Length: 543
Image (cartoon, helix red, strand yellow):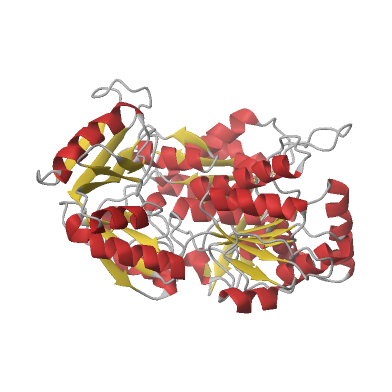
């Protein structure tokens, strides 16, 4: 949407311009849904859809549309059609901007004012449509997807990603400036006691003279989805105070909470917060799992500018892959032993056809925040203490390639079920067979068995189930007397699941085998028994 304003201005100045929008992708592609470029009839361009031959083709068609040719809807396989090595396919709609100029200007104004709306790009090349909607509804389309009627690409406007930088020192300012250059809205906060706010910060949309999160929320109209909060102040005591305030607010649903500092500092903060009772039990474990610390990719960064690159790169992983786990540090400090393999894994079953929803990939449906169901499950698992690298997604026809691409963006492993028509147990066998082959027998490991149509289970629930799994071989959540998902399966039962019969009863029979110590855990989370099988179910998992 960065190009909307200059393109609207160009049309207002009398230039003829076409807008090209990526409306569908499959496999590996340089850009994804919602990527745009604009092309004037004289060949000038704004934005990019990925470069290479695909962009040359679109530029040529765009010049013709800008000059008066009818709209174009073109699909190209990047290897067969264009000899590009990406391997995927892209579908692009190219339409004249003139009939949509006023909408583009309104969309640009909504972005500036953070006024929530949804923007529809008709697949037939018709004029864009903008609808102002409540923030929660707009947030459901943060990741572009087909509109309910299938006739347009729909995306959120005015609910963009925001980075709240708590600390206006050298590092905080370097992070803020780098984030702004990558199209994040930046809020800069400091208490001003040391004059840290005296120097201007032209890249910040808002400057707040306080470290208190309640003050920050009032200044920016609330904190929550779409916000990344970074704690980078000058003082460890201030860092700890902010961290505790953020963690104990269980209703503060941030996209990302990160803090700068060594592992020693993080460990000391953990001990202090445990002593203060802020991290008790499963809820406390889920709270602590929300924190990413140290922040930034493990690049060996030292200078403020290098640290900024590492931190903003991690935020980009969150933007593009839906989970920042791909960027977390995996090694200890110099001289420490490498971190052990995760004792908790997850097998996400995503090979179904979603026939009662009209044959769809449930894994790619958007949730209330615009994330795919798969991205939401990955983020929840990570928040409950399961590394993204320990999550494997089972995929299969007809949506295997698209779901695998989404899993790759999230940094998750993929295993293919060659014949998902044999039933859910065939996917269970594929996933647990993959795990069984990669972990020694007798290892103290557990795995979540998580169908992708249960995306709304909370991190606190998952953390409680994992904790219960320390004393049982099979843990099954229950709500209102009904068994649900995800279950937690001990390493000893993995071979049996890997060899279960090719129907759903086979997997269930394994989990009911008296060899395994089974524990049914009653949870106050209706999402464990709410699966998405019909259109009406979608409303429950987008709320």
